[in-house]
Image 1 (cartoon, rainbow, N blue to C red):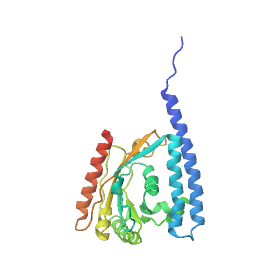
Image 2: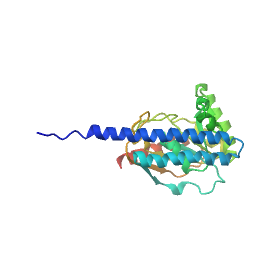
Image 3: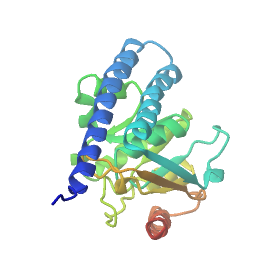
Length: 252
């Protein structure tokens, strides 16, 4: 008698090989683009940023080719078409994917990151040339002051600021406390907030190597004006919109 071999191990092996192929391409692209950005340190910021976007654009394309992960956008009409008004972007953070997507899709952005990332050879040095808002997370309350001071400087220069209000990647179906840093920056600068919900963690899990095929949903919310609002009120509104939208995405 013959028996049909189980398909689950074969499918898992296929996902593993596809994920490995993607990782090889991503590492190669990181080395190449980071080196180019470092070699072009003397060029204007906008030129260096366009070089960096080659990295995110390649990775999104390569991810679609190797792991069959694509994305679908909703609410793009809420993204300002003019770059005259800088925006603070507050987004759900479940995966590495959104760091690539937001860099590729939005105007030049400054990331609020932990300063230790800048110490990583080549990759961190290249990030430093893209003018991030690097903070010392161990500084406690003073880290919020760092976000405000450096964030306002970037916004005045026309560079959007991206903040993950939960501070770290969270697994699908879970949530962390939303920090006040983004809302405080908004009230100090007078800039509006663009909330973003996405479910990238369902396909590229936090801390996971194997990536699963599917279509990531990205939803942009209406701009939230900060003038005359308290940071607490703004943070509650951002959290309510993102989490309610996440529930809707999950149900779909």
